[in-house]
Length: 331
Image (cartoon, rainbow, N blue to C red; front, side, top):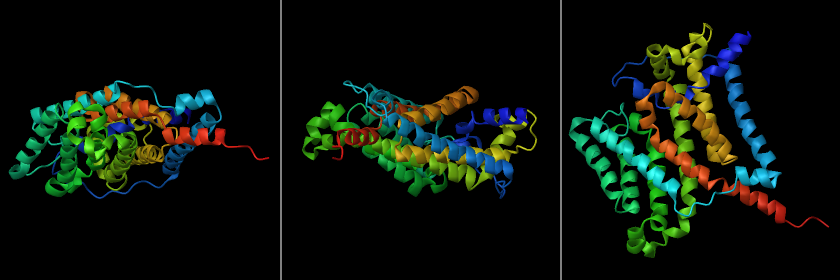
């Protein structure tokens, strides 16, 4: 039994490799209808995700009781030169360069009809060109890409990217006049600098929504996609690979779905964000090592978002803690 629990812990490491599991499922694959398991092991997996969510609440509560821990957990870091934002811009551009070189739109599984493929090429090229001129205009193009993904091209594929790309577009627009000199000159009358501090919140909500969407769409609603992936790459299912035959591919799909959804929910709540990001980063880094360049390349924008959120901290939790500290004690 101890061996089984060890295998269960090991299986958690590659969960985010399945974040965009459809990258590894050939376009047009006929996926059969499958149901997730509902046995004692399924209950254990769901309980594990709930325990993680509870741990976030505990970390946030403990950190709020200590000034030192509060600064580590919640306080924004000083970043006068906006290096974290430039890292995000660089990583986003690298993804679009890769897509153009590989003839892809957003991801390797994204099916685009030949008659509209040129739209995808032009939009991705515009991101690269405009990013060296205007962040605001780049953000507008990113919003157009997010909308085209679900409206013009393929809703089934586009929904796997919509919230992430839309959040990037809005964040670009909000920080444009703070970071880009030309945007300050051309768009100063819109006073966007007043809203620049909202950009990390937009990114946090967008990443959280995207993780929840991927969990539901690729694992919980249609577990056959994950099942197909694991059939082709069985070593990702560590428990079964180590001899635990009862831990099926569908159990792994359930584990990936509930934990990914838990990550998304806790990111959206904004409690102990840095703690959640550390856990998410560990998973994405471990799967990048296992899966190779394609996995790393596809998730580069997420690493950029994580960098921005790490620097931004958790302002809401910090403000709440300060308010409690400054509040007059009852007579």
